[in-house]
Amino acid sequence: MIEELSDYLQECEIEVVAVENVSLPATKEGKHSIFVLPGYNLVEMMEDTLDEEESPSEYVRHQLEEVHSLSVEDVWRQIVKSQLEYSDLSSEQKNLEGKDFEEIYHSYSLLWDGHDLLSEEQCETETEPFHVTVEWLEENIEEDEELIVLILPQESGYEAPLWIPMGGFNECPFPVHQSVVIKHWQEEHGIKLLAVSDDIWVMQTGKPPQTFEEALKLAKEHFIFCSYVLEGHDSLGDYADYLMKHDVWYFWWD
Image (cartoon, rainbow, N blue to C red):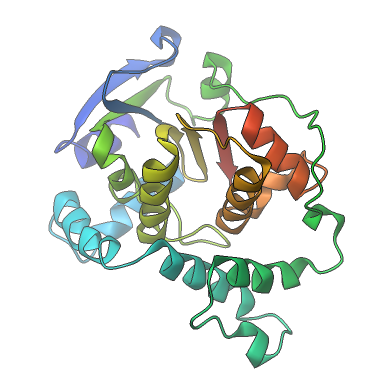
């Protein structure tokens, strides 16, 4: 798998590293050093992107045109619209045209109506922070004892979901939508991308929210992006408190 992934990413700056030789944290000044965890699904996703494109760089170039044409509000609408589509909500409740973020979130929250997870009350989180460790890397790669480090300029980090086009399955957003959201978080929260697999993104913020109000809005964004972020948390308010205290964000899709 490493060979296939390396060939696919040959137009990028990459390093192939044995897991046992990984040094943490894998940071470079002004760069995103992203652990790409090899897996058969990821190889298949990458191969699928080339069905209609001559090369990965052509795919990225075309996708970036769409990324730059979308606002993050457009993307929240599209992600939530796809979640609401097969629900029993009324057509009026599913209509997101012209709605701002809080209204979009309210429509999304209807899918979880009555669930304790939606509580926005501030509380002290007891959830331990996530850390990328060698043991975690070993657990999340298939067969190979090596992984790829994809190195992108800090300002280009939002292109990573296009070079590593996972997503578009179940509730996981399409790569182009991931790119828009990451661009938003890069600008608002100074994030760096740490790791990616066929169903995981790990990020680190350089600007954690400073108030509970800011943290709650960010928690709602994370919840729309990946509802599984609330696993291990008592509520949205609990997760918001977590985001104020810890700088690593972990997203996983089933």
